[in-house]
Image (cartoon, rainbow, N blue to C red; front, side):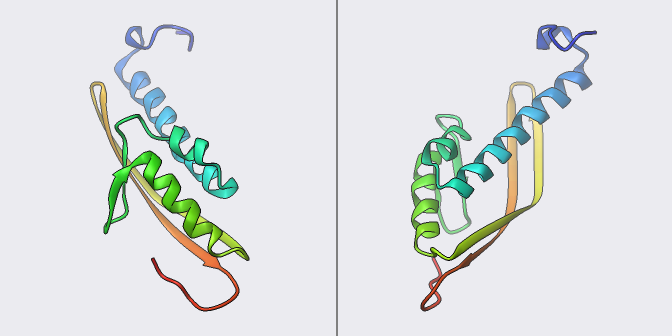
Length: 114
């Protein structure tokens, strides 16, 4: 079996692993977008109808990118985040994924929570 074979011709477990690798690539692309404050990279990590859920807010991916960049810019000293857990369930052509992230925003001045 070659990786160039069409996805539908590969065994089911290989298709699952390839899809999972693409999804994890989106998680990492989003992380790189955060690091560089790149709205395009952050937005590209979501499907057109994809959304972000921060618990208190559920928004389309593009709105998440704008919110995240405003928060990161407000703490100019430094920021870091750690993807602590990623879950993904793939059912046919649909995937439901969750990533849990710890974020530290360090800046000068008073503490601001949002």
